[in-house]
Length: 196
Image (cartoon, rainbow, N blue to C red; front, side):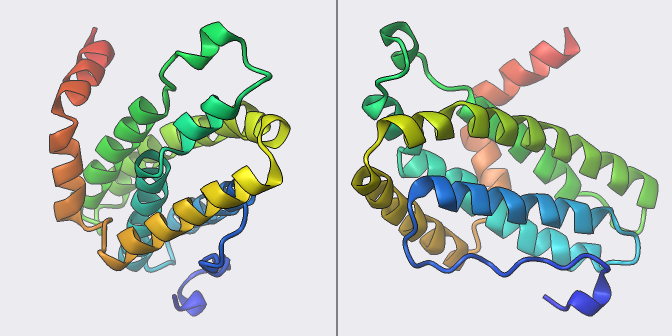
């Protein structure tokens, strides 16, 4: 990433050395937020930023799901009541909302500033909501109820899965379309909820 094209300094991608899961997710959130901020900058190379962001974001969210991060944290949960352990987290729904908005942004002409910025802000909202909820709930459960070794083991799985997905260019528009199509039922439910 050429930082000369933007006034925002993008943090380096995290090393794939396995850190524990809470540290990795928090580090990823900082990177995601920084990319979103950089894409707001009209002097930046938005197309390049979007391509890099898309790959990182899709790898992050897919690794959380494929690595069973949420399920494994909930299994270890002692501070969560039994009634809450059985509930499916909203994360998959939140990831699906973000994927829909990411696809809409990827399909926008970057030279149409108003449309592109509207699509960007529509993407930012579900990401910020999801990150905040995840940090206040799931990551606290992991800190409190998982051992250091459990967090490290889960971090290793997450890092490996994310690295593999990034190497496959999982954030390409074709792959994002495929992911949205795979979640077609959930997408229809989300659209119906929005439209009333």
